[in-house]
Amino acid sequence: MFQAPSEFKRAPIPPETREPEPRHERATSTAVRTPPVSAPARSAASGGPAPAKQRDAYFDNVKYLAIVLVAVGHAWEPVMDGSRAARALYMVVYTFHMPAFILISGYFSRSFDMSPAKVKRLVTGVAVPYVLFETAYSLFKRYAGGGSDDVPVTLLDPLFLTWFLIALFIWRVTTPLWQSLRHPMPVALTIAVLASVTPGIGDDLDLQRVLQLLPFFVLGLLLKPEHFQLVRRREVRLLALPLFAGALLFAYWAAPRMQLGWFYRSSAAQELGAPWWSGAVMSLAMFGCALVLTIGFLAWVPRRHMWFTVLGAGTICGYLLHGFLVKGAGYFGLFDRYEWLTKPAGLMVVSVVAAVAVTLLCTPPVRRVLRFATEPDLNWAFRRNAAKR
Image 1 (cartoon, rainbow, N blue to C red):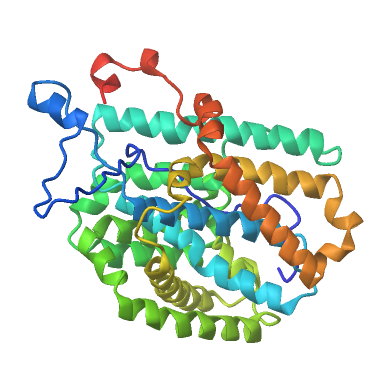
Image 2: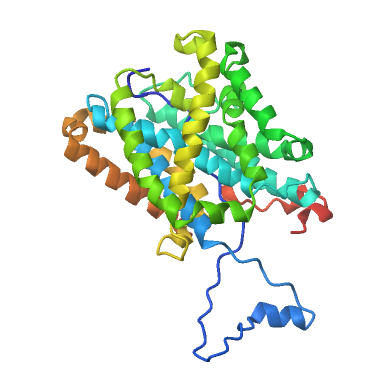
């Protein structure tokens, strides 16, 4: 596992939440600032439809910045061999970027109650995209991946980044269970530890990764808005700076000594050639490190509306599409032809190109074009009460 993955790795990211776009009101210049009454509010007051819920700019910023880290991390995989610093940075990013996305996904799943409308949204927003993109990535690997004609199209063994969609489906379906338990976090951590020492779980639906990352989703279910207010305090932001500096120094020391498989959380300890008990130790240690770094990351995310805030609503598109670019570059030998990409300057170029590409893939025009796959209209397949939003 000391080599950067060259095959389809089951790597992260993140679905979008479906809150409406944020609306920004201009403050009045009068001494007493009366909140303006928007058109939707006036409509509701007169018996019209209720106003749509505002998006939170902070969480859209979190999703966009996290998806940039995901894309950049994937772009590093083919070119980071030979650079200890790049490997260390990769390890730090992979420690927290997926847990951060899962935690936010859990936070926005708190209202999931298996009602017909919520089940419909789960099917159309998670299950259908999984089927479509799992098929698309399988065919892409078969026909563009150097003559791999035997690549099967299967929904049981997720390829590359599609694992997150099936994981989110499983986690969200079990939400009522976690919300009914008295102590859900100890139960989720116990399941994660047991998974890390059980190689017999196998690859079906990537359950190893689903179970090992489960505690972050359950933690998100337990969080409240005031917890994010605490994270965004000034003293937390200041503490985050030495925290990340220390993490980078430790990762630089550990880079030639530690297998990357621990960061993917897709294998049991025995499958990594380690004693079984190290799975339990590493599972708890990785959870603690990921949680601390996630807090540091969330502390530095801007709270106000930024130029990239609107892109937070399109992260599902950036997540699902950027894999074709990364894997396509590998299939066509781009990284083999241009060896300078493994040098420091090349790593910078790869990072910038990946960040720009995923940014463009999150824009509203791409989201509209891809809506047939990420937000399909399947009202015809559901009963009338489930079709109601």
